[in-house]
Length: 318
Image 1 (cartoon, rainbow, N blue to C red):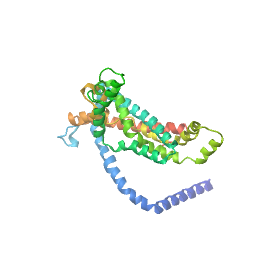
Image 2: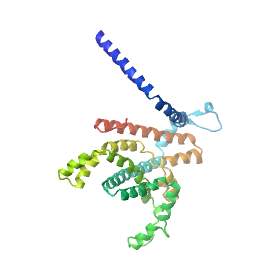
Image 3: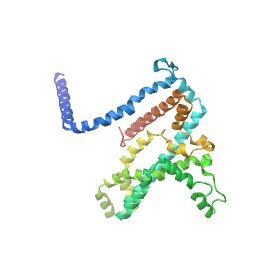
Image 4: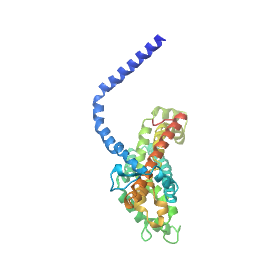
């Protein structure tokens, strides 16, 4: 028993020495990370104390200690309010559409670019595809609104020329179209940027695998299915876990700028809900409760997805 305890103590001391040796050897990197850690603490963690407003009937004119504590009253109002349930539905629906379309288009474009042998053409397509990422949402939504306008919008003009429709469609005035407009706008803006990670993962695949498959008579499609896609599987899983952890972050700019009173039942997200109640109406406690709910759910989904990936033996984030 004494020998076991001694071995355990020696192992602990050895691990401690190794740890401190790494700290000393990487002290420059640690010092360089201090500004980022300070920034993270100031702007990400220190504001968390404001979550206490969700448990108060917060009044701006009173000090923090003079506020009325109401417990879970704000959360009860949220969960039984039809307006918030509608907002939650919109947020989840648009997030799922963006996630699905985003992954499908990014992986497809990355695979197609990876198969192109002409380097100049490949780089040109890649550059053109990710340029929209650098446009502000103000510009993007303005372009979308012009393209979908009823008078000279290119979408209505083309569809009428092809005789697919007889008269212009009010695309931004019909709620059933709004989610898909948001989804395809997101794809157009971000698909090129999202392919960068997948192209980097494909570049790390051993070329000998393709050579061996070619010797065995595999077609290009078979090499994609059995080599390329499995080679980016770990990258896909990590990005999927991160995306699941952002399920309730469906966006704010697109919905706020493209939304109008005719599609308000389809366009409002949790972020717009918090803006509406927190700033426009002044109900800061309710807005804080909604934001707190979103953050807690996102963190919970992140850990659940990571745990499920671990149970399935897949690559995980944590």
